[in-house]
Length: 346
Length: 293
Image (cartoon, rainbow over all chains, first blue to last red; front, side, top):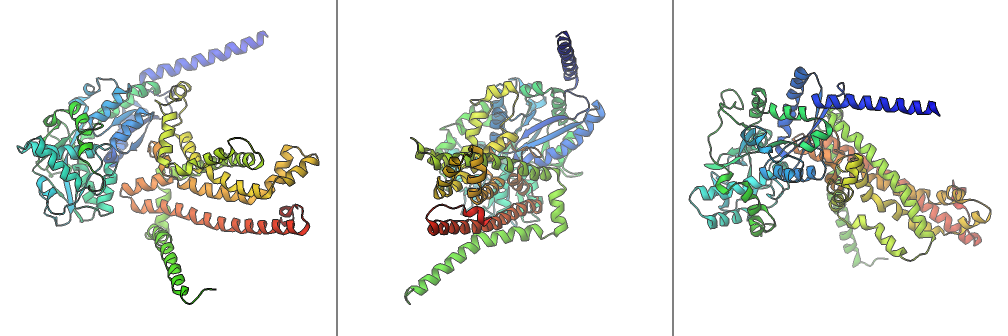
């Protein structure tokens, strides 16, 4: 009997020592065991697949050099809204790098991200920008130069669903803002976007699916998308597609956040914060620029040496009342989009 | 049999059937293989094996599908036994329930799983406390796949078990066989081809499942992407040759399924004939299947 008790005591001692060890290393860099790789999951929106594949490679090397720990970063990409929903439903993201403010805010409201997330990284936690541009077929056969051209003749438009997609939301807001910015009123804006969405033969759930619809399946005359996605699309098209910069458009602000609940549970906070911080480093900014996202801050690097960022007059979400007001008003249940959109071209 | 007047109509209908099969089935299938193998067999092989995420997707499909099929096999046999051998209140309702996965959209099935097993779901807090991951990981993929393939085995077995009837099993019991002996020596030999047929179909469906798995996968490359999800992802990432290579593996599986199905159906028909002949010969049931084997 006493031997049994001794065994139990020994067992407990071993368990508690092991627990103590893991607790200590959790406080420092993270993970439970310094010899295994720290696993990070980056849940992101659709077009960032290629960007983060490059970022991950360089960051992993950096982190190993600086902290002597291997990091294994996994990526998940889909429509920004669906991704926020998945994280809320239990997809264990360490960081979220989504397309629009309301998607990160939704995860914060679910209690997974601290409410001050917008102050944790520079520029309201927006490390890079983009802008909504047009992609047209070779030679621009429909002569699409600016927003009003979208609703002329029989032009048909590809853009994803603003309910689920960040690209979709920005396309909608860019169209709406283009009317306001040129002196039009709310009613003019509403008439314009109603006509615009009457010309969308399909509304894909995410940005990348819309790209495939336009470039690979050959549907539509113009694709409204992020500048970065437009470049990728045009580069992959082998000269079949061209970018058109409208005279003015909306500035895209994709925010990033550490998912506090998950990193604290997994003990990965140090690596997760370093990962997002890396997006603001010179090396991170260079990779971001290479993928045609516009890095935030002074003297942004350009996609290639000697290549300047095309000048576009940009307005931001404040023209439309800020995200907190605009998101429910335009995209909420029974909002403007619900009121104007008739499936299948009406 | 046919009159002169009906002959052109028959020819027209046959031509239409051939055209539909050609356009909807043969041409796309050939196109997938042609596109996949266009860069050469070596490139095709590299597309499948060089990318760790693609390798993982193939591995994942090869582990998820058999587990889902195994669950369905056990469930299918038990459920078919229940409804074929017993009469009880609610029996026909139960049979209708087996078909729910066929009538429900796979996406809805996936969402239902999220509503139950998700962080905010019914079992969310319990699972979080146990630190078990279901949704967005391997168990969720198995659950979703099991759900959509649920009717395939049981639906295959019910008619066969009803046709064979309980006589042989009752004879075995009267000779002193216990439950397991009856199952292994009488029931299983009688239903084995139908069971195999159900398993082959369930496996094909499990490998190809997209909708339900799409919802519960979480799209983590190298972790929760099955082969069909990988096909879509590669296509969207402008890696069309790789996408087509994975698609060709799925299409190849479909062809293997087709051959297996053909062989099994041939055996099923033979056995049905033997059973019929044995019954008409001596008016009693006869273990035709054992003799045939």
